[in-house]
Image (tube, rainbow, N blue to C red; front, side):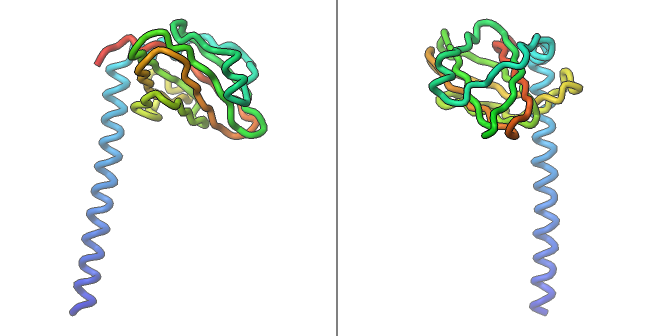
Length: 168
């Protein structure tokens, strides 16, 4: 009798776990669709941004500081990752509470210390043929922010940075 209770409890736990997993997946898909609809103009602008080709991605934070990117100008880049698969960019933030949209290769991760990365790794529905993911960045003060890019060593990656114009 005791083993029947254990089996029944195990089955109930499995059923609940799959229900929660489906709910999480549905929730993420719902957030993704809502964000793509709300920021359609920003995402479409990012889709059409011309890319500067075959640029050398700084391999250290110190080198990134020598090539600071002004985020007041929408920009796009195509980089080849180094043999370590890590590169850095420095962003010049000139306004308080600057909001940016990052549009980047699916095989890449992005981290910006000191900034809030929100809605990480959204699927791109605006121009899905480009195989890009989307994240939003909120900065809190003006100054320099270092962006760390990670991808497969020696792989080609793309990154577009546009100012967020749509307001929630």
